[in-house]
Image 1 (cartoon, rainbow, N blue to C red):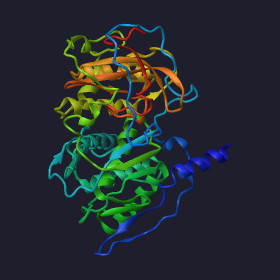
Image 2 (cartoon, one colour):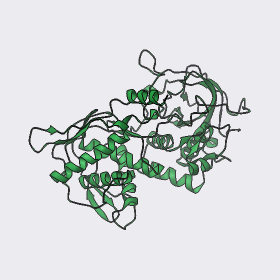
Image 3 (cartoon, rainbow, N blue to C red):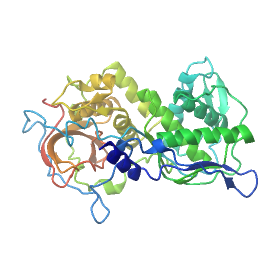
Image 4 (cartoon, helix red, strand yellow):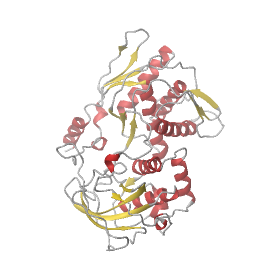
Length: 431
């Protein structure tokens, strides 16, 4: 059985191997190859399939018209994942949305951290804030402050790579050195790199920097050429995941870099998991409840941190949703166990407690949010009771189901929205 699982995992992850750093001191860019690492196929949860995509390439839509608030109160919530043996369907992943960006912003980015200088804590803190800067503005700053030192973006890449390797148990010293920028960044690779693959890639990039005194224009991998800019974003996502979870992710997904949209895509409005705003008062959707502790210091502090520098309601909602989806693991149990504050503290929860934390953070950020309870058929074919959140942006209530990494704000793919049976929407969940 173990051999079958390993072979299956290898098939799922067969594109995550093979990497090299471009040696491009001349106009001709040569590459150094690297054999596949046998431990690349170590875990089945390092990949997943979007098996809810219809034949026309669109995600299914569904769900009947939502009933009035506080109607049909349920007695209990059934299982909302495929099986109790599955602790979560969320892969342990640091997603990286990246592309080849020409040039930097020319700005200086003051990252968070104390003034004690360069150390592990300040490096992680700077990586977290750099990730947020990139996602907000869709580009790199020219410099980053780490503790009391101001580093060029190439120097900070060098530092992040050394911190990553040190965290992975490799020999590395967190020292700052002179590193020239990549002269002609190129490449637009997209895809997944497993933990062993991105660690090996980090080692190769550092070898290139050691030999050339500058960052490479691109790093060659089995998914294509990862540009200098792309590499920085990927590593910042890895370290940000480590800062939140105390460990390195199983894989990193490399995609195009882009600034967060100021408004929701128009295509989301007509999806059945989203509902039109009917003009009702939203005061009850902004208030604290017993399990939705909007005024808790930790909740308010996190909401402020996640939305800092963001101006649009959609950007704020997206930042909160993505953090909960990527940072809170799934646990199987019935009804409420932790509430918003307990879920934040334990970093785990079922669908109900995921929703408590989401709604509390949305409301703490000034965004009206509510709960939805229904019966849903998941991608396994099994049907369970389920709870998720909706957040109001403009004239639409957008679904926020953070229990699956396959979901994004306003778009659910972990269960069939076309056949979902909605039992009610609530300002305060009655269980």
